[in-house]
Image 1 (cartoon, helix red, strand yellow):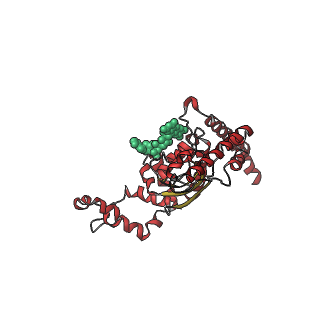
Image 2 (cartoon, protein in one colour; image 1 turned 90 degrees about the horizontal axis):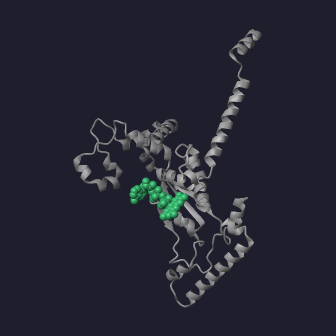
Image 3 (cartoon, rainbow, N blue to C red; image 1 turned 120 degrees about the vertical axis):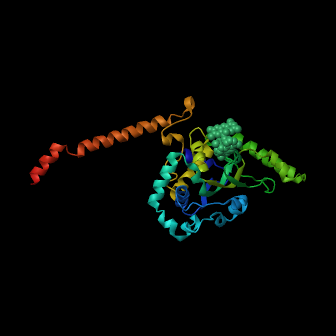
Length: 304
Ligand SMILES: Cc1cc2nc3c(=O)[nH]c(=O)nc-3n(C[C@H](O)[C@H](O)[C@H](O)COP(=O)(O)OP(=O)(O)OC[C@H]3O[C@@H](n4cnc5c(N)ncnc54)[C@H](O)[C@@H]3O)c2cc1C
């Protein structure tokens, strides 16, 4: 219901869209390969000379894998069937291991790019606070926003009086924008009038490690509704392409703890109660369906 109100009240002809448009191919196999490289003989031997030319090595990854004659390079390993050798099954095992062992840097090798449209500037401001990411956002300096779309928070959309007031103020701002345009003021200055509600579009790229952190903060009920909505949509989509890395992603309560103290929303307790009920049901089913040793023996005796 909330979602419906959100969509209906979202903005004038504008609805939030979150789409995962590109991602590293085989994101989990690549991270598993990275993890494996820590323990493989084929790990590159970088000589003193090469390490002085670090930049070239980074730009041309092939040059970093200078190895002695008896060792095959990691690059060759990958090119010559390494992808297949690190099967999906062993990726799962390796990624589970590195995730629990805290060896999270291997998760930085896979990146995910999202197009995010129709969110408020209030929301985008929260997104761009995440420094371990890349952003490109619609420019208010160059785009003419005299008829800007805007986001209406559900609590305003659900309150007739607040809604009338909200729309009245937006209309006034739009009028002011047009008036200043007519006076020859450049858009980069007129934008000072624009509210946090103004709709914006951006492209965001994050690696898997940073995304896990982002989901932990922004899928939490303590995050604001709009950025939480964006984060949940992103999470659904990365789970489809990278189910192992993101298996336990989301608010910390998904992983059984809550860092919020007195400010907790109480969801963790609900999750725990639900999990206890589920386990109790399984226990009940097991004790009901599986015969005791003596019952089993009797059945076997009857069959014979
Ligand atoms: C519920 C909520 C309420 C918030 N309220 C406010 C608020 O009132 N005011 C406000 O200003 N912000 C607020 N924020 C934003 C918050 O403080 C962070 O700026 C934002 O969540 C980005 O998180 P981050 O810095 O961990 O992520 P990133 O910038 O992506 O960084 C990821 C991680 O890299 C490391 N890192 C990055 N840069 C540095 C660095 N310079 N030094 C050391 N380590 C670094 C840290 O471990 C960090 O966690 C709020 C966030 C949330 C979720």
